[in-house]
Length: 284
Image (cartoon, rainbow, N blue to C red; front, side):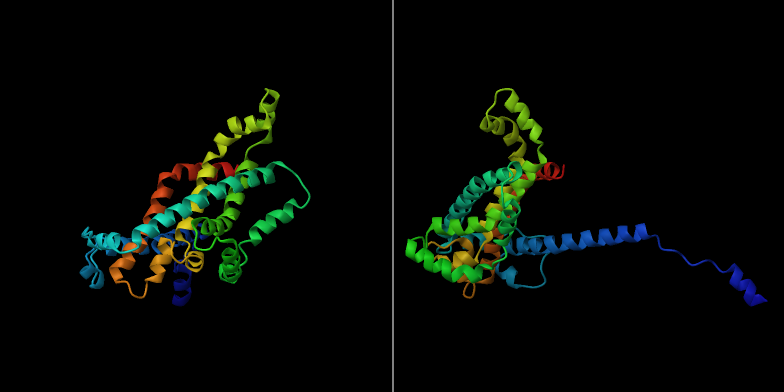
C-alpha cells in the first residue's frame, strides 16, 4: 500500500522543452565559432605586441605589453618592404580586374536570357573545382613562354581567376534582387540602358561592388601557393614568409601573420555597412 502511495505521489519527470534545447545548442554553437575565430587572432596579437623573449616564454600574458620590438624587427628585415609592396600591387590589380570583369558578367547573367545560361553559371563554379597545385605546372610553363613569369601582372591574372567566381556570383545576386521595372521606368523617361544603369542601378549595387572588391583583395593578399610557384624575385609577402619560414625566428613569424591579417580585418570593418546592405539587397 505504501509503495502505491509513493508511486502516485512521486513528482512527474521533467520534460525538456525542444525550443529551449535548440536555443542552448544555438548559443553554444555561436560561442564555439566565435572562439574558433577570435582565439587565434587574440594569440597572434598578444605574441606580436610582445618582446622576442616573451614570445618564446610561458605562460602567456592576458593583456599584451605593447612591446613593438618584434614589429620593428619585422619592418627592418631584409626583403619585407619590397614583398609588401608587391602584395599591395597584386591585390589592387586583382581587385580592379575582378570587378571590371565580374560586375558586367553578373549583370548579363541577371538581365539577359541566352542559350547555355545555366551551363555557364555551373562552369563559373567549376573553376573552383580544380585545385591550384594541379594547375601550377602548366601555368608556370605558359607564363614562361609568354614572359609573364615572375611579374606582378602574371600573378594578378592568376589571383583574378581565383576571385572572379565570387565577384560574378555576388554581383549576379545583387542585380537579380533589383526589379527590372526600375530600369524600364528610367528607359521610359528617356534614359539609355547605360544611363539607367549609372543613375539607378549602380548606386544600389555599390554595396555589392564593395563586398566583391573586399573578397578579391583578401583572396589575393592571403594567397600563397601561386605566389610561391610563379614568382622568384618579385615575391609577395606570403611567398616571402613561406620561403624564410624554416630559418626565421618565432617573433618574425607572428609579426608577419599580424601584418597579413590586420589589413584584411581593417578593410572589412571599414566597409561593414556596405556588407550589411549587400546582404539585405541580395535577400529581397
